[in-house]
Image 1 (tube, one colour):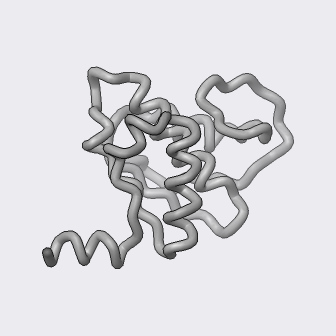
Image 2: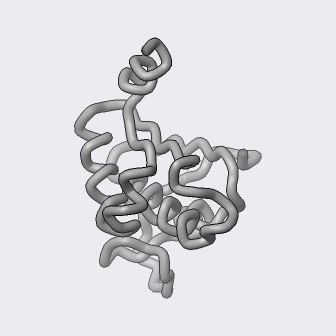
Length: 117
């Protein structure tokens, strides 16, 4: 886990970033997040800072590495149902339908329900 929380608020910086998902270019923190080594990462940021795009880009980068982490080992955890659906849609778009079905995208309540079952 990074030594400090990642700030993901967008800037108007122009850069090339092959894993990015939208027309908005990432700021340095978003770019660093998507390319961190495989492992657990905690992202804490306010609404509108690009968390969903950054998480989808990270899933794409991890799946692209293939031999390091299989899609079934990826857990994308959000707070609300709306955020879960939004993230699942973006992950499906950037990773592809086959791999995205093996990635677990859920919220805290859904994860707790899986554990209880």
